[in-house]
Length: 103
Image 1 (tube, rainbow, N blue to C red):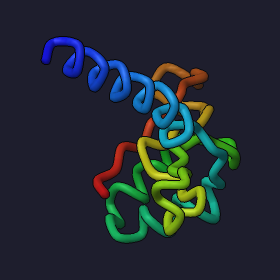
Image 2 (spheres, helix red, strand yellow):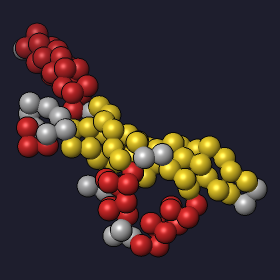
Image 3 (cartoon, rainbow, N blue to C red):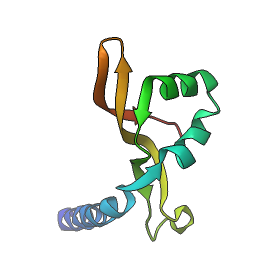
Image 4 (cartoon, rainbow, N blue to C red):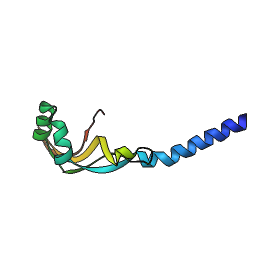
């Protein structure tokens, strides 16, 4: 019985190790084409982001792609990360802008 549980645990660990890199990877997203339309649902937040930061267009989101989830077809989900310039009260500063989302 103990050997069977150990074998099941090893199989589960192996499957986890094989699937996690495929399911949880990063993929590129466009700030203008992919993120700004999402921000339009929260106009005050969109205005704040666009007025406070100069954001590079290419950023990164979590890429969902796996044989176990073929309907996702490489969909990117948040959190999204972009390199940006923050226009703060004491001058400009390079930052990583992270836009967290709920699915």
